[in-house]
Length: 229
Image (tube, rainbow, N blue to C red; front, top):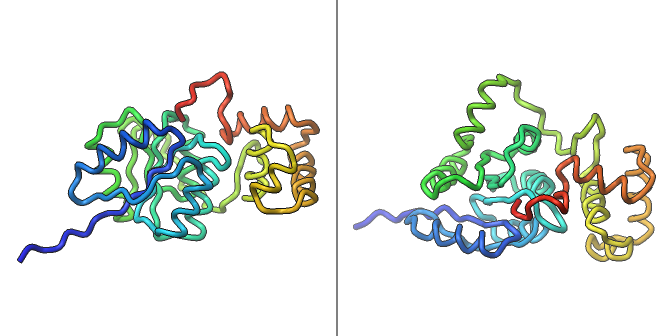
C-alpha cells in the first residue's frame, strides 16, 4: 500500500496574470506541491489565506490596493501557520531587511529557476529560511543581527500602523477619500483622520509629498519603473 503524499498547499499572489500562470505551470509539475488559489492583490491574498489557510504564500511585493509588505504583516499576525515566500524582481537590501523583519521565511528574485522555487517552498514549509544565492551572500556579508518583528513600517525612523500604511498606499495610488473609505470599509471621517495623522507623523502636508514618500518607502512603485514587481 502506497504511503499518502501530503501536498504542500500554495497560494500565488502576483498582480500579473502571465506570472501567475507561469508559476502555476512550474509548480503543478511537482508531485508534492498543489496550487490552491491565486490572488491579484495583497488584499485578495489576505482574504484567501483567511478562507483557505494555505501552507505557503508565494508573494510579490509590488501589488495594488495592498502591497506585499502589508499583506505579509497581516498574514503573519493573524495566520502565523502560513509561511511567506517573497518572489520579487527587487533585491534591494532595504526591501529584504524589511520583509524579513516582518516575519517572511524566504526571499527569491524572479530570475530564480523552477528548481530553486520548488526547493524554497519545501524549505519554508518546514519553517526554515531560504534566500536566493546572491541575497544569502549579502546577508552573510553584512553579519547583521536579527531585526525585531514589531509589525510596523519603518522608514527614516517613522513608525506607521498597519492601517496608516494601507491608507498611505491608497492615497499614493490616487484614490480619493471616498474611494479609500469604500475599499477599507471605514468612514470618510476616519480616512480623513488617518490622512491627517500621516501628514503629522511624516511632516508632509500634501498628497504629492505623501506619494513621493510611498515610492521611497517601497510601498508603491514609481510609475517610471518597470511594472514587474
